[in-house]
Length: 171
Image (cartoon, rainbow, N blue to C red):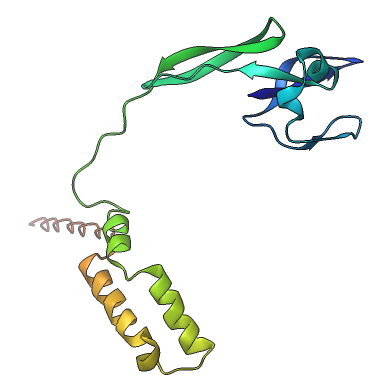
């Protein structure tokens, strides 16, 4: 991996302002076009002169997230050190019907998107009838899926009970 250094007057230094994980053609800060393999073959000193360096980033182990990191020069390359934290557990799965519950099953049961696009194209652009293009059949399938997996509707609040009438005072 290669890191782009920060310009500090006539020199380059930390922090890293950008990184690429493979070499690619680029234009340096002076406007010089560099070929894709330039970073691979350049020495550490040549890279630093134009604001680039080798960047060593360790893999983050499973079950961990990066909380913060520090970069430091080690023998001509920049080595990134991570401060790790445990990955938070996934959100609990809530049972019962909730808003959005219909989305996954409905999307899986719909006719393939490509079939819908082709049918729509044949109807609109080629001006075929809905039966010839398959639009009618696909729309029937869509309506059946919508009926099977309806959108969540917030239940209406229970009507408030009317207060009982107070008895009239007796004379």
